[in-house]
Image (cartoon, rainbow, N blue to C red; front, side, top):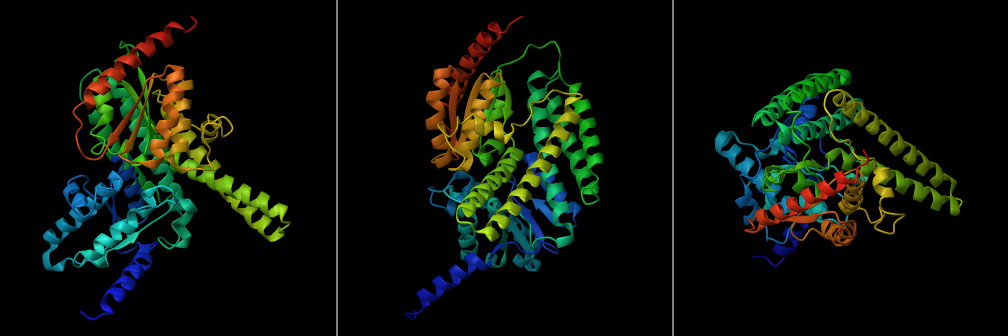
Length: 457
C-alpha cells in the first residue's frame, strides 16, 4: 500500500461528512423517513407527499441486528435502531430491484440538534457506516436541525417552503391528537380492541386528508376531519367506568414515542390500571421556537450594551420571526385541541412558558442548558400540578439529558409524595421490569385515592 493512501482516505471521509449530509433537493428522489411515533411519521410523510415528494416510512425495528452489528454499543439506543432501519430497508430494496437498484435515487432523512446531546452525531455515524458498505455511499443523508427551527431551505422550492412547514407542523399536531385519543379511550373502551381499530382507521383518514389538502392550504378541512374522528372516538368509551390513575410520561423523545423500542410501555401501564398521557412531539417543536426566540432576545440585549445598532436590528428581526412562528404554532395547536375537545376530553399540550415557570426562576434547572431535560423536569412538575398520580421518565441507557432529569426529579417528587420511576432501554429485556411497573402502579393508585379524598365536594 502506498504510504499516502491512509491520509487520502481520511480526507475523502471528511468530505463525505460535509458533502453527503445536508439539505438536498428532495424532488425526484425517494425520501426515507424513520419511524418514531407511528402516527407522527405517517402523517409527516402524508404532508411530504402532498407536495409531490416520494416519501416513505421505513419498516422499523426489523433491522436492529444490523444496527447493533455496525455500532459499538456505546451509542444511544435510537442511533442503533434508526441505523438498522435504513440498512434493512436498503437491503430489502437491493433484493427487490436487483440490478436496477440505484442507491443515489434514495435520500435518508435524519434530523440533528446541537450539543451536548449525542443526537447531533447520529447522521455522522450513519454516514460513516453507509460509506463503508459497498454502493451505499451514494445515498445522501438529508438533515434538518433544531438550530434553525428545522428550516427546509434547499429541500423544497422557495415558493412552497412556508406552506410546507405549516402543513408539516399541523400534521405533527394531528398525530399527537390521535395518540392522545388512543390513550384516552383504550383504558375505558366498552369492547376490547375498539380503540386500536379506531386509531388505525383514524390514522388512514387523516393521512388521506393531509395528503389531499395540505398543499392547497385546506387546513379547515383537515381540522373538520379530525373533529369527526374525535366524535366517533367518544362512542368507544364506557361512561360507567371510574377514572383510573393518571400517569404522565416524559423523557427522550424517540424512546417515549417508539413503541417497539420502549417495549410497548404505555400498553403495559394500562394493563396494570393506568390512564397514560405521553409528552407530545409538538411540545418539542414549540420548545425549539421558544428557545430560539430567547436566544435572539439575549443576543439583542448584548448588542445593545455594545451599541451595535446593526446587530440589534438583525437580532430584533430574528426575535420577531420566532415570535410569529411560535404564535402560529400555538394557534394551530389550540384549533386542533379545541375541535377535538367538543366531543372528547383529551389532555392539552403544556405551554412552554408554563413549563419554564415550573423551573422556579432557574433554581431547579434552566432553559439555557437546553436539551430534553428542561422539558422533562418542567413537564413532570406541570403534570404534578394538574392532578397526575405518577411520572415515568423514559430514556435510552446512558442518556445524559434524561439522567440529569432523573437526578433532579427524584428527590423533588419524593418530597411531594408523587410516585416516580425511570424506564431505561437498550434493546434488552429486564426481568424485573413488570414487577417494578406493578409496584409503581400500586403507589399511583394510592396517590389517586389520597388526591380524590382531598377534593372539596
